[in-house]
Amino acid sequence: MDTLENGLSDNIVWHSHNVTRQWREQRNGHKGAVLWLTGLSGSGKSTLAGVIETQLANLGIKTYLLDGDNVRHGLCRDLGFSDADRQENIRRIGEVAKLMVDAGLIVATAFISPYQEDRQRVRELFEPDQFYELYVDTPIEVCEKRDPKGLYQQARAGKITHFTGIDSPYQPPQNPELHLDGLRPIHDSLAQVIQLLQQRNIISIAN
Image (tube, rainbow, N blue to C red; front, top):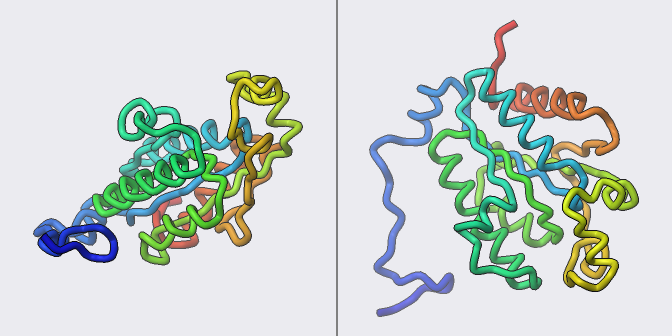
């Protein structure tokens, strides 16, 4: 059986459904999109993603939250935290998010996703108006003080390796759709996200 450059068999083709994304979006009353929250551990991205999901749901928006810890319980439970495993983790999440956007959902994700190259690969899975990178920018000193899981302390003690910000790098986004200040009140950041979605005609909120 022959294979293509991407490793797929040449007998595997994309199946177009009768129920299209455009039809789903019309029924939903909003477009599908992914909000890709990135930042250091403890930056507040997971908390913000949860608030975004709640607000969108309360507005009647079809939405779902993909959280880093949750996907490692199932979809990515076979992966560790080496550079290669992290790259594969992000690739899988990107593909899942793509399917959800095709279903007409607004997907919020909360992943450190420390490498610009990996985030760019995910971006390239989507049409230009479907992917929004949100950088939750919080100083590492603040993240360490928050340290809800005690991970920084363990990393400093050498009990955890390949920990972003300690012995593994974090590459901040160069041109995110939103650069959010992780020190500001969370509802300020939420307001910025909702405003972005309205400006990009992803959602429409009646006054």
